[in-house]
Image (cartoon, rainbow, N blue to C red; front, side, top):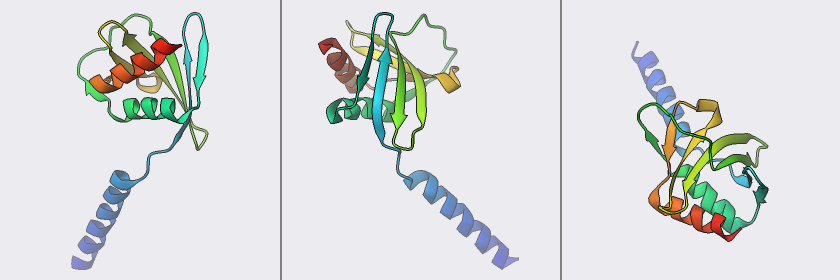
Length: 125
């Protein structure tokens, strides 16, 4: 009995360690699609801005009831996985949020610094 519990605890710790420590896949490109244009970002500075924004979002409670997104965003990772988001940005207040297309019930609020960096980047284009 004692041997089983030690093995169970060891397996649980191993799984938790893997979940908490596993490396995040590297983003290799981000495509933004608006009503008028499509832009793909592959440079390191832009990828860092998008990566930081995605990594630091905070889940917002409540129902999602918003209009059309500012951009449709396709994020391509090094393992060829493509994750689709709707990106909502307010260029005046420099705030924004994401909605992951695979889970459209959850709004992901962008951190203030990430929103500012994104709006600054996208204002250049």
